[in-house]
Image (cartoon, rainbow, N blue to C red; front, top):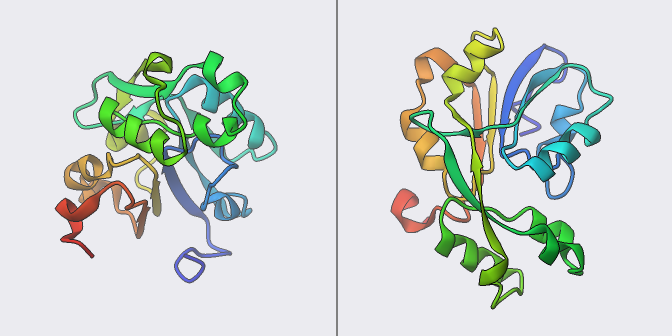
Length: 186
């Protein structure tokens, strides 16, 4: 990404699934560049507050407390409840886990060493918005970079995005939850 993201020219971005903007965030170093301006999208209230705090000094950012989805409808996300997280030694890592699927969420937390926590899994309803609506809402014509960490929900965006409208020059996303269905086992 160092090769493709300019260091001097003004560059716009949207980061979907920004979480707290700090822990396990591969895009933070780019977002902190003086030439970067954009929108940080995070639907979970706990993470959204931390995101705002962790980027408090950077003025060229817009914070959006929504989920990206096509069509723009409210969306249910699964997370661990605060009571469970409060005393857990892996609180920071577990607080980053979320999914639109209950079963996928169970698998994700099992990979973090948590099992038998079904009674602590809670559903959070988030407002949904498309990227095109997000750009319109914030008076932007397009975005140069699109960063996504959507826990397997990326294909919905990649397959529905109006590329002619958004005009991303770089699209970066996590593939861990996409499996063979999207990439044929690569």
